[in-house]
Amino acid sequence: MSGGTQTTIDPGAAPPRGRRRRIAVSGIVGGLLVVFWAAMAVIGPWIAPYDVGEIAGMDMFGGLSGEFPLGTDFMGRDMLSRILVGARYTVGVALVATLAASAAGTTLGLFAAARGGLADAVLSRLLDAMISMPSKMFALVVVATFGSSIPVLIAMLAIIYTPGCYRLARSMAVNISAMDFVSVARARGESTAFIMRDEILPNMVLPVLTDFGLRFVFVVLLLSGLSFLGLGIQPPNADWGSLVRENMGGLSYAAPAVLMPALAIATLTAGMNMLIDNLPGRRAGGGEGH
Image (cartoon, rainbow, N blue to C red; front, side, top):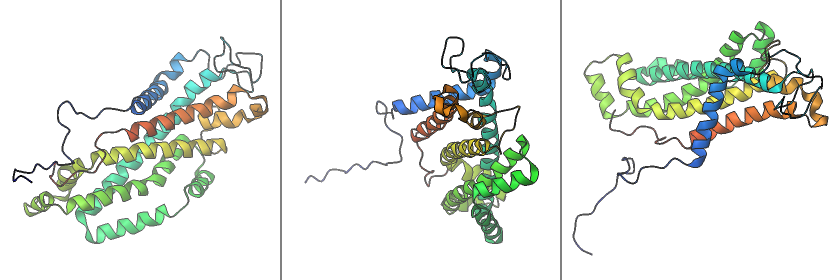
């Protein structure tokens, strides 16, 4: 063998020009699905062809037609209009609850890792106790106690998923806080808030965003499940889980009114999963600071 210099490649380095990471087709499809439903949550009520409560057809559980592209429900209401309006509740409530859970869990995880000691121990034990409670059982108790208004649903979902966000954020933050650049910041006398915000958080943004997407899927499924049981969004409002429940009578007729809201839930969650699977640089930050 020759005695030439051996070249090593850093696996964490950015790919050279001409070898940039290509986005898979599934990632593009997933991103388009997520963007589509996010847009429908914003503009759906304005582009719906009928009022959400209007009995637009004479046929109950009507099939697909030019007038009713997604059929009609058990009262003859246009399913396309109800799904477009329902997107605001499914996507909107899930998004707000996931944002609250991710923000609370990440902040607490950063604080526990940066502060350590008693604060870390108390927070970890408290949130471990919370995560041990079955989510559906906790949801049933909350709804039975406080009702199922939208603020209660958002707060309940945020509380359920905050411990999981905390555990992920803390585990990454503990590893990062042991690195040299964080030790230097502590030696300079920087505050805990500065270390959390400027030293640790920038090195864990991508894993936190990935976890946010997964939590969003979990929240959508739990919210839809609660609505299917009659414990989620209440009439006259309806999310996609409620639409499935109220049209279950059309299952024996193979009515589109049963399939279409379930398909909406499936495309939203599958799209988010495909998008997350193709996010670039999903590894936690390396040991070189920010």
